[in-house]
Image 1 (cartoon, rainbow, N blue to C red):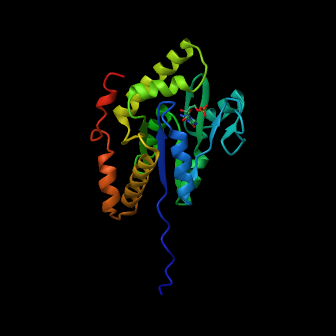
Image 2: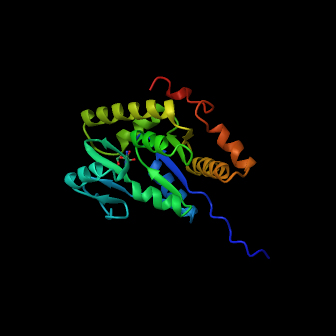
Image 3: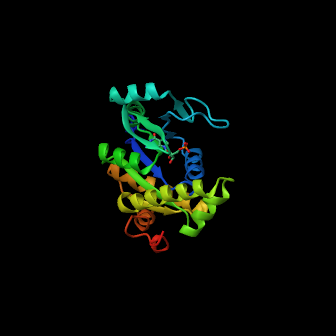
Length: 225
Ligand code: 5GP
């Protein structure tokens, strides 16, 4: 047996974005449950906790003043305003997970995903999640609550912006038609990209990931969204 210590795996930043209602949070939870070396990147936000959300677990809940202080101190790796609230990723969170060789999973919007990709072009992989078609997204957005038409219209407009940017610039697109299939694609993308970082080949994962590349995936159903 070799006494060589096992090489630390390279840290990886896996960014998930989606229009609201695409099933991104469920996919993220399933991925985290299946991968012990994956950690959820806990963001800072100025919005209030909802339901069972816990400070430090779901988000770091901060005041607008504290958030402004983090921005001024350069403590955020990215930040954006979403639905009138501010959200950002602490630089320390990213650096700690990279140093530990973990897979950090980000549930952030496209503005944040673009910033993470620009700051960490080698380690970051951006994955845009879409429901099967625009009609399905509209149904999910409407089916979620008893909000007024006005609120739904605004949510749809935000979704259109998000989809436009995701399809224009993200590395991969996963169509969440069926949860297990979408999870398998996400896992293949993560494995293929991690192999690339480690200088290994992972042909089976690479073949699946290739079919999820932006520009390869058929997004015809979204042309008129
Ligand atoms: P929610 O308030 O529903 O938890 O999140 C609203 C939106 O903000 C979601 O699209 C979520 O992905 C995004 N978000 C959460 N954390 C961050 C973050 O740290 N940075 C950015 N840019 N977006 C975030």
